[in-house]
Amino acid sequence: MSTTPATQTREARTPDGGEPIVRLRDIEKSFDHGAGRFHVLRRITLDVRPGEFVSVMGPSGAGKSTLLHLLGLQDGDWTGDYAFAGVSVGPLDAKARARLRNENIGFVFQSYHLLDELTVAENLDVPLSYRDVKRPERESLVAEALDRFGLAARAKLYPRQLSGGQQQLVGIARALVSKPRLLLADEPTGNLHSEQAREIMQLFRELNAAGMTIVQVTHSEENARQGTRVVRMRDGWIDSDEKGR
Image (cartoon, rainbow, N blue to C red; front, side, top):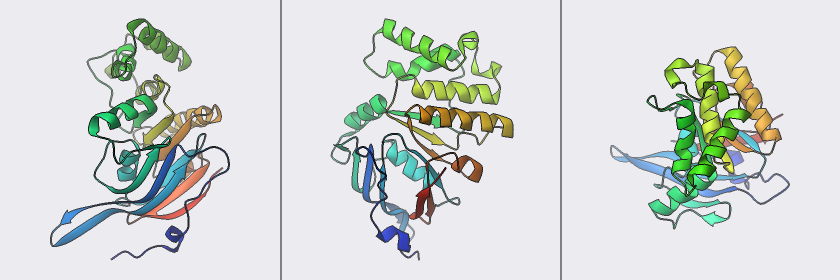
């Protein structure tokens, strides 16, 4: 049975500057397992402030991806207090959580999650279609994203016609097209070779330098060091929370 790490007993680390965009207090998640309950997250207390780049690390089963899904408002089966940009998440119904997520959070996945039957431009339009954005504005935002990420020449191509690095670049552009307040990335370089991975991490650093708040889950120490903080998890607990670069 896990015991409480000493580092978990202190208050959440609160970097200087700005109110937290993410504020977690005593978050727990568990499920029935045989004769007892299996705890996936244990008393998670964490703040993420605007402009931070937080890397979450830990061995398989530590709770990293579960925490990321919770931050992304994709999981409502937990206890504790979660406030996103000052909004208490717990009392919200599924529709209100979806609206809060669609208007504020972008996602980057290890496996890209692009829609194979849609072109690059059409994939970028998907998150805008979930919001009340008129067609001319959607077209303008997609064009802006294509230009920003150097994808204009590939706008009419399909994912199968792109390299892995190019697909991940499209995934990042899609995550940012609606100008979210928070970018969540789950092993964003896991399917890329080393040079592509370095290019994606450099892009993340540039995005963060421009003010984007990022939380990434990674197994890579090199990737983790790109962030401004490194949060390490073990057995569902936060084991340490330290400054990065």
